[in-house]
Image 1 (cartoon, rainbow, N blue to C red):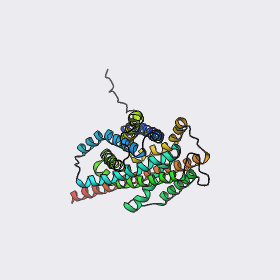
Image 2 (cartoon, helix red, strand yellow):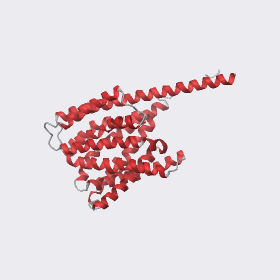
Image 3 (cartoon, rainbow, N blue to C red):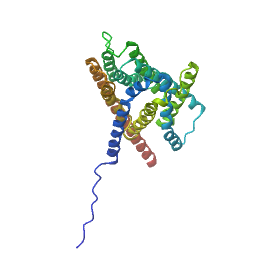
Image 4 (cartoon, rainbow, N blue to C red):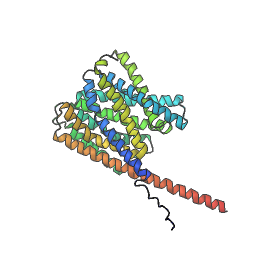
Length: 334
């Protein structure tokens, strides 16, 4: 009696589905790590100088990402040129020396829960800068997203009755930090395309931290004073938040695409205030909840728009490729 040939059942999950599942795990880890950023920086900022803590965490974070950066450069067979270093220096100064220094100062002037939401509006500033500096123009959908985000910011500010623990100056400084970070994102797109995410981020962090170190020395501020007694918080902000946090974010992008990775910044405004309540005993008022709601809606709409645009670009690329194949086939038959 002949045996029936064994039938191989298809895998329960396709490779793409497995990658997406992994991507969402990385998104969750990223959101949790980034969600602790403001609380850990506020704790560290109580004993350490704002410039000092910013320098330390980005120097450490850049070094953590450095092995992955070198592997990426070797894999892509890319060598750094003088022009690349200048570009990385500009990006690093914008992102670390300026934006994150203002970010650290704003944390010390506001509640961590407020800052954690306001920093998440930087993608909306990225839209504005991209409109003027790149080919990515503002659309009606993007204007709607910006309007919703601005309403959220207004509720967070509540200028008619500022919440205890916040200050108008601190919140304005945070908005300025988010604005410069948006410019940092746009400025880094050129070097990112050539060098890759890990290389661009690692080198810009290290160069930005080096420039900040020079500023610290010129201003006569402390570099290592108090680090030993606050070593745990310095290592946590440097290794876990800045190093591992960005690594997980990049892995989410690698496995699921940029729009999937962006979900981390959608979850962060919901996670960070809860951590601030638990660790710092902060109080979340109604206006903060409403502001968070508007920012979350704007973020979600932005993510969906990115997914839609990405799908549209893929479809267009496939159409062009199909047309090329038809044209080549036609030429072969002539």
